[in-house]
Image 1 (cartoon, rainbow, N blue to C red):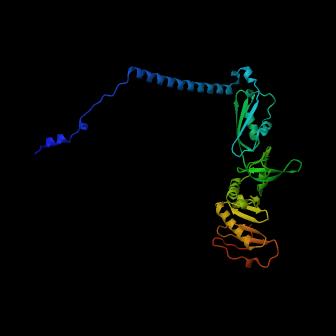
Image 2 (image 1 turned 90 degrees about the vertical axis):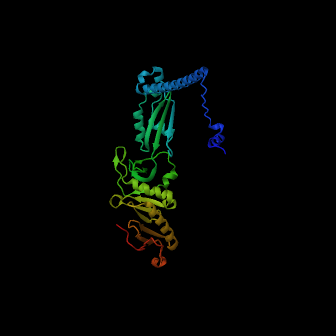
Image 3 (image 1 turned 90 degrees about the horizontal axis):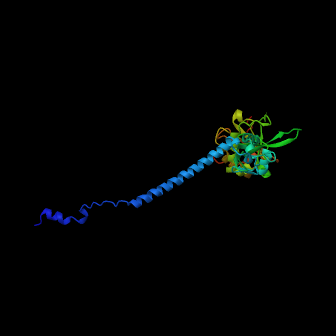
Length: 327
């Protein structure tokens, strides 16, 4: 009969025997090579950092103190203008040269960048501007431009009329280099006072809400937006209402107190419904009463009785064909 100790000995293997191994130490030559490699890497990093820091300090010193620059370098005239515009910008290099109006042979270091920036911002189409010298003879101008959302008519000197553009933030400006087709597609603004402010005009109040409506219509219901002719702000401040007149004389009153998307969706449905069930007519649709949507209809041609020609609408619209417009 085998003893327990004999069985235990039989079950053990060579893996159970402790085998301490001392790692091989790095040779003296290996340590030297490692140290030299680390030294070279550190030196390269330090040299590169020092060069970048020195270049930055030189550029900063030249910007702050043109007297530290040699006279010959300060006399180098500006030969290259580089205009960088944000996405959607339309201004070009010809506009830049005309606006800066630098004298012939103006030296790069003699330019007053703050004053030149003010000249650029005086054109209210420019929302932000930054000018940078790039030696020896290049001036780089970075700008972002406003985008028009509507247009207005204003009296020009001599009694003539001129067309001005209005941006989302309400800023009014003449507009340069826009595609004429783009300008013609913009609706007109009405129902507000255009107030002069120096050489320009004060921003139009309430344009944030109007711009939201126009943007929603343009990108989510483009076929509706394309038919809009005039946008009135007459009751925007008092009643939070925006009245839109279409090209055929119909009017739609939107509420600025609620989201515009449901109103546009209802308008899309009602437009198709009325076009399919009415002779050519002018209509007035009022979305300011919530679920109640009064509709006033003015036929453009004699009809017998439009009330009998209207089948019931689907749920969600309460239409009163002859309700009086809200005043």
